[in-house]
Image: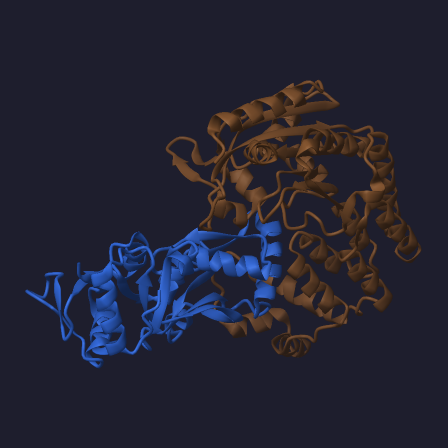
Length: 234
Length: 366
C-alpha cells in the first residue's frame, strides 16, 4: 500500500507546497494537462500524490483516506472536533501565513478590545432586540475563543465569502475572518481588535491518526520524514 | 454498556415516582421553534443544538431541554401552584470525542409555587435526594441569589452592577470585571487614550474623524457608550472591604449550616444580602424537615454558575464517580418565567435526572 499525501490542488498554496517538498528532494508535479487533477512524486518510492481543495483536506485526514496532508492550521482547527486527537501536526511549512481576527467598523471609537466588544454587544442587544451578529466561516474557532473570553450577547452568522462586506450590507455588526495584510479590512472601513487575534495560521503538514498505517506505509513514512527533516511520530 | 431497554425501564420507574407525588405528566414537541430557545440560551447551546430548516415554520431545533416548553405551556394556561413531570429525549451535539451521548433520555420535574419558594426548593431537592439515595452520589448545592444580592448591594453605579450581574454565569469574565472595578488591574492604554481624546473633543466629532459610519450600530449608540466610558472613568473604585467580601463570597465553600453562619457573620458589612441569606436559612430548615442534614450538605456559593444561564437562586446537582456530567441537576429560575410570561411571572424550581447514568450506576452497584 502506498502512502497517500493530500496537497492543495491549485494556486500559490500548491506552488509553495511543491517548492517546500522540492527543496527537500521530494519532487511533486501535476501530471497530464493543466486541468487534470493528477500528480506524481519523484525522489521517493511508495508515495502517491492526491490533489485536493485545501478546504477538504482536514475532512480527508479525519476520514483516514489520506495519510498525510498539507493545509492551513486554521482549517484543521476549525473543521475538526478535537483536532489533535484526529491528526498530528508534523511541521509548520513557513508559508500561507494568515491571522484569524475579529474586526469592527473604524467608526466604533469606543471599541478596541474584546472586553469593549462584549459591552457593546450588551447595549446593542438591548437597543435592537437581537444579539450582535458576527459574520464568519470559522464557527468553531471563533466560538471557542469568545467562550473562553466570556463574551455574551452575540451570535455567529455564517458567511462563506466577501465577509468584509457584511457590515455594510447590514447582515452583521462585526466580522471574524482571516487577513494577511489587512488591506481588505481597511478598504471596508473595518479595524482589528487589539486583543482579537484568534489564531495565527500557516500551511502545515499533518498526519492522519486514523489512516491505515501498515508496515509498508510506516516504512515509507520513516524514510520520508528523514528526508523532509520532520518527526515521524503520530 | 447499558442497554436501551434498561435505560427506558429506569426512566419509566423515575417517571412513575414523580407521578406518584401528584405531579401532572406533560408532553413537549420534539421539534421546537429555534428562535426563542436560542435567544435564551445563547451561542454555547446554539453550537450544540441540532438546528434544521422547515420550509413553513422556519428555523427549528431538536428539543435541547424541556424546561422552556414546560414553562411556556404553564404560562399559557397553568393553574397555581403546579407540579409537572416529563420524560423524553433531548438532543445535544457533542464537540469532543468520547463516551458522551448526543441523544439521551431526561426525566424531569418542575414546581411552580408562589407561596413558599424555599419550601418548594427543599421539596424538590428532597424528592431527588430520596430517589437517588441508593446510588451513593455526591450532592452539591449553591445559591446564585446570594451572589446577585451581594452585587446589588455594592456601593457603585447601576451600570457597574449591571455589568457584573450580566456575567454572574461567566466566572472568569466576572472576576476580570471585579478586578477592574476594584482598581486591581490598570486601565488599558487605548482606553486612556480615548478618554483623553474625549476630553478634548465630542464623541460625535471623534466618530466622524474615525471614518465612515457603516452597519446597524448607530452613531448615537457609539456616542452613548463613549459617554458611559467617561462616567465609568470618573467612578471611584469599589471600596476595598466591599471588594474583599465579594471575593470571599465567590470562594465560599462549606457544609451548608457552616456556610450560613459565615454568611450571617458578613451580613452586617453587606446588609443587602440579608433577605437572600434569610431565604437560605429558611431553605435549610425546610430541608431539615425533609430529613436532610444541612450540617453535612455541601454548599458552594459559586456552584451552578457555569451551567444554564437561567438559574437565579437555589441550584443543585448530584455527581457520580469520575469526570462525567451530573446524574441529576436543577435549580430555581424565577426570571425565566417572567421572560416567557409576557408580563406575568411565577417563582419556579425544577430539575432533571439522566436515567442512562442512573441505570449504569445501578449495574455497577449490583
